[in-house]
Image (cartoon, rainbow, N blue to C red; front, side, top):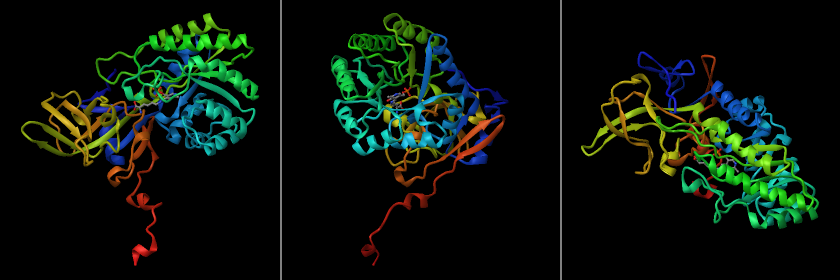
Length: 418
Ligand code: LLP
């Protein structure tokens, strides 16, 4: 992972002083670099499109801010959406229905109808969903989600492609499901799998592609020709300073070689989320309290598990720097902890930092994927702001919630007010 530049000990982000952004917008705040976002999209599209016809369907669960979506829409991306909310958000950002693919799990009839009525392609997750869609949206465009029994990911909680997870149709039932889909009159377009999130090696993606290629060939024998093979998302990114990024070009060559050698399919689809947005964004948070308990030193900040849940939820590592003490000598180890009333509320454990003091701005790295999108109102804390930086200017792309917003949809029965 690369570090940011600094100017006399002041950290710079996309040409701006980080502490200036924090001062202008307040903390906590997520700050996204537009040019890095565009570059990441171009890098992943470029690596695969050199090898074969490629469609990128950005997995918008990673970050569904409308401005972020709009930028990716301009870049030519498609969308992988997992809920009607994500589908509608992407339509609002300017994507047309034909650029959106819906990959729900445990989908209700109501949601299936809403998505199908919009003309969005549906990735079928179960036999039940297939039968229900035959009644709700006969003739819909579909793809089928396979469980390839190949897994990869930074935590067991995000491995989706192994047997025993709730996702998809087991590979050995695939042919039956596709034949049934053909009999039901669906417009069958592709095959899909998603092995997990945050994997850092190429091999599982090649194994996955092999499973999908074999099924594709067997389908050819029963007269079902597919337009695309969709290998899902899951490309990992380095979160630690000494970690190297995964070699995208190597992945692209090996995965597309497998598809080209084994099948006649012309198009590969990928659904990266993390790769496109993770390193575009810093979470800025202010040190509000420093506590030395003898056995342990704590840096108390104004962002907690309500703002960025990944450390608490998956034990994920996010690098942290003090914006205006950039590159300064580290004095001791600290736990960086938030304002939420749980011992599990932390952003970092045992982190060496340069003499943190109240008022310092801390920058939490790689917060663009599953950062804001997983934030919550726990402890009645309003969601924070988001800012976009481009060409040396910072613009607000989400206003902070207020406490009044938290009350907006609640109702106290009149009898309780008497
Ligand atoms: N496609 C499907 C069907 C998915 O379920 C996912 C992620 C993706 C694509 C995108 O995966 P990515 O390229 O971002 O790895 N909250 C966790 C990650 C959960 C990912 C869930 N599915 C985290 O913070 O690490």
